[in-house]
Image (cartoon, rainbow, N blue to C red; front, side, top):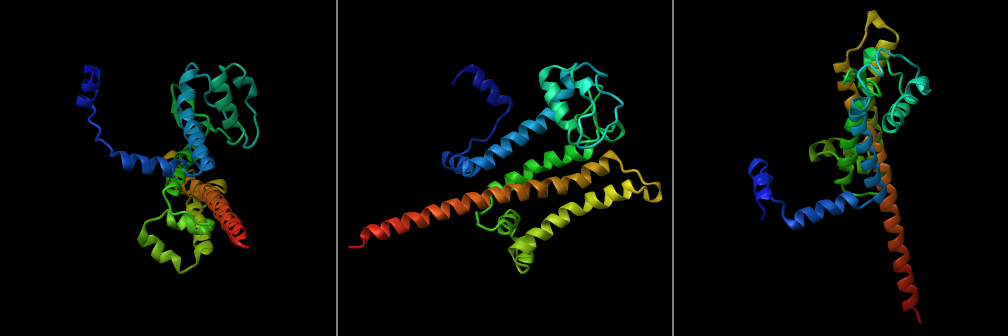
Length: 240
């Protein structure tokens, strides 16, 4: 072992992972190529939210407001290098980009506001939870399987699909309450970035859980159909 490796291990002594454990983890992560691609794409996007503000000078995107689902800062993005232009344009297309509801890095607003940033971060955790859940051809059952046993026991009596719907509703509720209270200015209420992060987290997690469960369901259904075809083919060949 080289001196450089020894120095690395001295300061960052990662525990060794048994080969069979590493192999099992790898198999779970790549069991569904579509699910793995979703995780990679969302991780890249999430990282880009934090990287892009550092690729342009401070003040390049500051104190701006806009509308949702429309690119209304195209003149600003045209001055950005390609990477930042892509990230900020995509953020612009889905978010208001209100400066007072956004986190700031390097003197720039982040590409999307605090709540949406939180949602994307926690969506990664939802997708990861699905990857290590027991597969099923029921989306609701996959979502249930991603939770600890004590939660599954409590929700299983509802039935898989109803339990899955309840999980989605519970994840949506904090954002709905905070967002609509702010929208209608009930009592002059204006949410804070901390509250946006806290309410966006369950919605993002459940969103990742739902999309991931749908992809896992498709993968499991394909596997079971292939197995049925293989059995039918074997049976037909065995007949005189």
